[in-house]
Amino acid sequence: MTNEAMQPRTGHSSTAQVVRGSGSYVAEQGSVYRSGVAAESVGSTMLWLGMISLSAGKRTSAHRHEGHETALLMTAGKEIEIWSGAKLERCDQVRPGDYLFVPAGVPHVAVNRSTENAEFLGARNDPAANESVVLMPDLDDIVP
Image 1 (cartoon, rainbow, N blue to C red):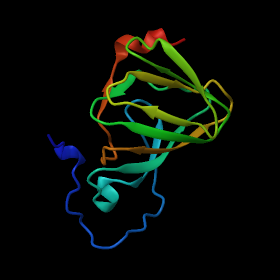
Image 2 (image 1 turned 30 degrees about the vertical axis):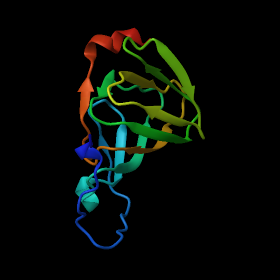
Image 3 (image 1 turned 60 degrees about the horizontal axis):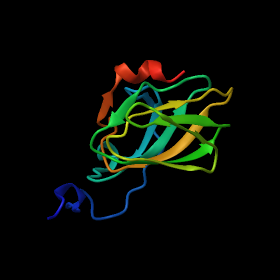
Image 4 (image 1 turned 180 degrees about the vertical axis):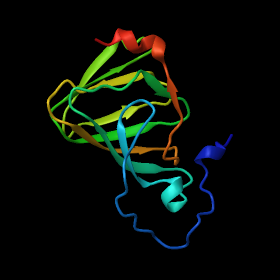
């Protein structure tokens, strides 16, 4: 059985493309995104790559990404908490230099309790700048 979503599609370009840094936007879950490689910028069909930041003292809303995996590298800041699991029962500390993997469908919340902004390089297998986020307000009060 083949997974159509994982099959390469004919690209929109027959050459490499340079993407200059772009403006930022606040994602539905509350973090700030700066897209680099995306469907909108280069016609990507399987990949999004960009920068994500979580301001000092902020947190995301509880959410999941139903149809895609996310990989992050923390590049700056002090430390954040990533709460994950069906009832957000697991809490891990993420520090600069750490990689983070969030499987598709896993509920999570990121919390930045520090006085420094946290910065990440992120990639996912959903090429849209506005990814498929499912907010989970029933879990928001679990994370202190």
